[in-house]
Length: 278
Image (cartoon, rainbow, N blue to C red):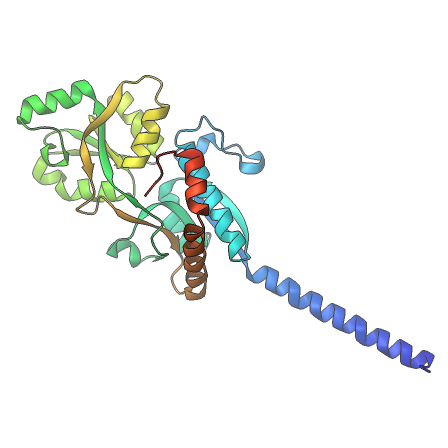
């Protein structure tokens, strides 16, 4: 029959084991705490309490898709994620500086960006389109004798999101085409430049332009010319991650594959974009 001393010793051993497991568990929890950056077209719209995305925010549909996608990835990799809602241009610097672990936006994979961050497997595909007032498009056609396209842009002002592939493309052709490049911090700022006549055309990702046109109550603007996916203006979209985080990238890629394979990604997208993203 166990003595009082034996029972005391057993209780002590049990208590030590409980503490040890508690410390181990808390260490594991800390190891999978991540911060995910979600691109929003106008951060001023995001309310602080709970960071709720209001449905009237420009581009709310894309932000909500990325938000749900981020939460699903975090759930499948057993990570506890904090979401931050920021402008496009803040995401890559934030990942480089260690403020963000995952970046959800319309990120095309380019050699220049790969010097700064790592990328997941492809999530969806993107292209670019011009947006303008119909009268501006007609003026350009009369001036060049060509249908409006990125190749017919000459002697006009074009606005793009700072840090985007559209900006990079325009910067490379501005000199030879006589273009004035106007930069905006957000897609909402791009449309403000058009409304305030600080730019004649906007060059945006096609999905971004579509969502902003849907929310534009004035109905003044429209697509100008066809979609473009070559010359760095389109391709596969990826999640941005820190370099040297190979294990994180591997588990995120596994989550992307299963989310797409079981139809979860398509379900998320079609809640907000009936036409889908593929």
